[in-house]
Length: 269
Length: 269
Image (cartoon, rainbow over all chains, first blue to last red; front, side, top):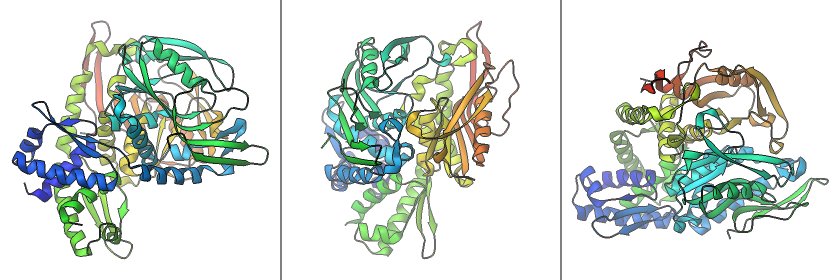
């Protein structure tokens, strides 16, 4: 295969297999080329990825070595994307009762969701996350986007057990906003003990839901190494119960009466 | 920029923007190259994509023209992937009460979900789908995977209205398996009238849920052009109420007593 063909094929392969170690012999055999040629190809790809601001190729030496595409979005690129998102969210028509914000349209765009996933994955790349956990429903697409870049599975916490999941572990928790007692369940066979977990959700006010997830994960002796929320907003009535988290946008000065709202970049920057 | 660099950058761009028309001047300006060079690059990429079995570049002539990456997975590749999935599913430990099958582990793998999405997108590529609709919870990741390849938004039907979605339209329907009356809701501003819709779900027995979605979509005067389910299974007690659909795998001869099950490729092939 010619270099030009290899570059196309290998770029595609690496993008479809982020955070995954690929051995040089694999490329060598698949594309019928000498290891030295493959190394040159990878050097070209690595430089281009870095200049495009989409990450880099990490080389791991030794017999079990190879190359791994680490999809790290450039800071400038992330900021541009989040600035545009803030502009779109800062629209008073989005205000809903209770100080909530209508975001379903943005969360319904696969390309937007994928970029959000890449930003979180870039932030959490060094934490050796083993599984991404979210709660139904709106956090699910974001969780998959993060997980696909980190190359780890997703586990979904539900509010109601379903017959198609087998035996489950459940906890009760107090929801921050409604102050009602709610339930969360996780299938027993969904998570191994001691797993390094990243929690992802779309929205956080006081943080009751995320706290509930943390409690539930304790039952699995999971190690929560990161918490990422797309949007955070202040809760007027209750203090925040989650302290360590990463947010991409921050909703402030919500004035339901005068239909005003401010949206800024979150604590990631 | 050199050809080798352009090939890496353009391959990445096209893969991240499937089913989207990109003008030649855009590439020309972004990568500082003559249109003739860009055309040659695209010819190389097109041939490689086809040989890798991941789709092709469609050229649209004229002033508003350009090139579009149509991500069509080769039949052979899809079949290999589905054969492997059938093998994994044909495990009696997956059997759950009521003849359901535990699939959460597979549905939790982003790479698997992405491939399923690509197979459905390949099957529905010519139908001009404008929006993918699914119902919470398990169909969500599949719906996003399909939608990302078709470059259209996702709309999620819920079983309970949420405050963060504004005003909603709801219907009641009879669930096939439990024969209970259930509710489905969709935010009013989530779907425009007359949209061409593709319904995606993970599992179908009698089809009550999908029928419910069709009923709800009638309220929006939507045009359901495709229905895709990952797995279909027979319902012993009830006849199927949905007739036109595409399934990727078929679960047959479920014998809960003797813990036996058969899984074959679905009606796509």
